[in-house]
Length: 298
Image: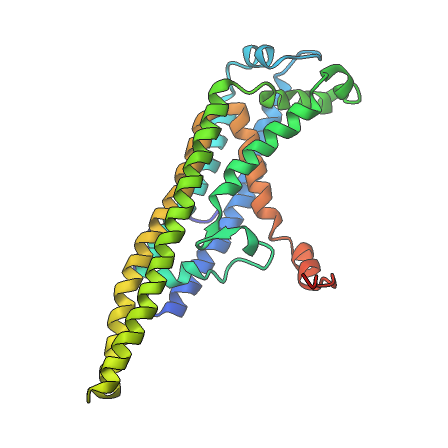
């Protein structure tokens, strides 16, 4: 398994293209590590499933009572996968502080991933929406648990029973979800407003200072220096905005994991890893890029 640390990004070169190539290599290696960590978590889930020995119907209260002592392996692999995602966010921070342009326009993401991106990486709403999807899916499937689960037998039934971790979520979990959603509704418009203000300021400054430079006898060199100075100033502001946005991603994921029990965390992280890995499928990318779907005139 490749390195999960981000220290190698500290010595990125000054050349922006080289910087981008370095982080692209890091991201591809990070994805390979994710693919290696996923089956380890899945095996830990399977081991935990084998410890379950009960018949349907099962209530969430009974499920938690019967699985109150998670296996050490399950806890370990949940922590490893969560730390792996946090390592990626930390790496983005380091890369942005060296050259924010490389992460604002990430060439390592493909055309299928692009609609899910926000300021260079996954939109924070992806994490909260995935959590709601789990709760909605399993509550619908297990409503009237005898009829819904009567077709499962043997190990499949036990795996289905493991999903009872999502049924009848606690009021505390719903409260955490509402807090996360309220935070997103406040944070995202505020950060986008800061981005808009920086862009408007940059364009305005360039226009005014360029006219002033042309009117004077400063020459081409003065104009170039002026543009460089303004761009440097605004890139510092963009870096601050990106880092704030990126840390929100890590914070929201940490809040979600902190609100879940170990079984919910295992299923959630398994789903998140599958979601991200799935977008790298060569067949899926090929089908999307060669799609002949008609473009709507509207």
